Amino acid sequence: MNEALREHRPERVIHLAAQAGVRYSLENPHAYVESNVVAFTNILEACRHHKVEHLTYASTSSVYGANTRMPFSEPESVNHPLQFYAATKKANELMAHSYSHLFRLPTTGLRFFTVYGPWGRPDMALFLFTKRTLAGEPIPVFNHGNHTRDFTYVDDIVEGVIRASDDIAAPNPEWNSDTPDPATSNAPYRIFNIGNNNPVKLSAYIEAIEDALGKQAIKELLPLQLGDVPDTYADSTKLEHAVGYKPATPFKEGVANFVAWYRDYYDV
Image 1: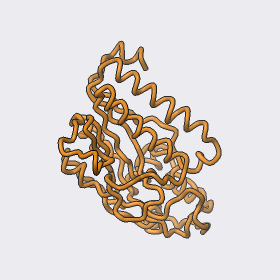
Image 2: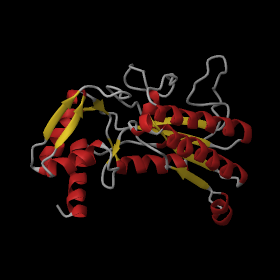
Image 3: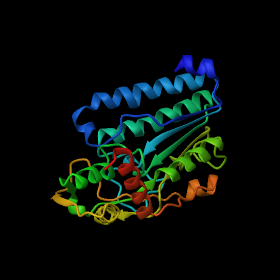
């Protein structure tokens, strides 16, 4: 990291790399410490020493954990994560604040809500369901398809990330230590939700995949999995007010775009 920043002298850094995924964190928590805690420390140190103007990084909606008040909004407490993955991403937010406070490094954390689209991760539902449905294999449908997720299309995420990076974080002049807002600070630090503002039931998401494929899925209905939350729903109004972010892709259109990409890429 130090060599890269020393050579290229970037004004902004956008950090999206991580060990992601809820379920794998149950099996290999050490991978999450190495990628999400140690590596993020390396990012912060490099940004500090090379005078980066603004660090924008990916957090996750998973930090809301046991919260049930919908929609999720940034001033709410996120002190009850339900998986180790979420705990490491919450740690990133806290680590970023300490560097914003100590070294005046402007930082913006973006809590991603279920990103999907072309080139998506193979372990995510859209990729897995598409692959198995085309192969005639059953798909695992946890919580009997009653999950709701604020599925956010990748193009909308990219737009929000770029807009946030271009708008350098600054101290909140109204921040009050007697009633502290956890999403802002008197340091150049802030946290935003970045979501679609439109939760969709998993069963409806699967129907969109079936429609795009022209093929019915074989559904293996399963109970809620350990570490999963039943619902997510982003209140992204703060990001909209700050940088004009407004998601524009309906989930059926986004799913169809992914299926078209998948068929072309894998020639199926």
